[in-house]
Length: 347
Ligand code: SF4
Image (cartoon, rainbow, N blue to C red; front, side, top):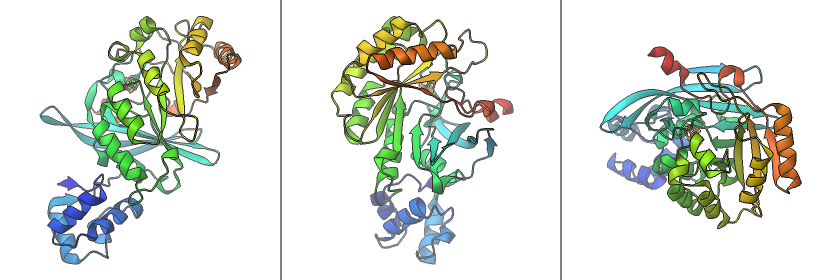
């Protein structure tokens, strides 16, 4: 059965016509899926019964419940979803995670874009898990619809499991549905995509959307970054920054750089100064992130005073830099810790 979630209004019109409905029923389907979040065709009462029965023969809505939710002492909630993804010529069952982070008047959804990840960053639990397939646009949008906070979400960050620009077709389709007037009708200002810098698709993202951008930088020195992030070989961070400089971030659209701090690895003043030289003149923000230790890794988090000094050094250089509060550590929902635990236990 094919899922309707993730289809554009034009595609829904074609599907409506193929089910013997008038083409305007495509608009009704879009409203039922993206505004009213209907789980079944029976709820779609302004579509004829015959039409609904015809749709049921080939389609499902694609809206599916999470299989578990864990709540942190700080109010962060982590949802687990079962997904089925194509890997080569076979389908693979996996578990993916989404996190809802409440913060004063904001509720941010941290969205996954892949089951696992093939980028292999050394400090990341998702990377260790290997790659288990791209999420479909339906799987991505279902995270927005099926968390309990769906109607009160204020923002979303593509910062969960996977590299969103390694799944560009489905991520761009999901963003189209999220921001279209016939879809979720979210302002692009509510969405941030976080990437390690997959340049060809980064260019497409910057051209086609007005959503914000976050770049996982983590080290300004090419050789050191390569040791942590294999992506540096194909797409050096200097080229990522050069590309970003060609776009306007002085208005509503923002770019930030994520910098996870590892003790004795990337937290010296020479790193702060090189970071400044790399980003000099760019309207941006640097977010320092405390590393959450992962099993069987020698990497340690930088001590708080070291992070503070690093932040002050960048601020003194004129770069806006903040230390990002860590959320949801007790339920393994913090940065770099998402790993589909449920699936691991099942194995
Ligand atoms: Fe993939 Fe992001 Fe983890 Fe790197 S940090 S392995 S890109 S999920």
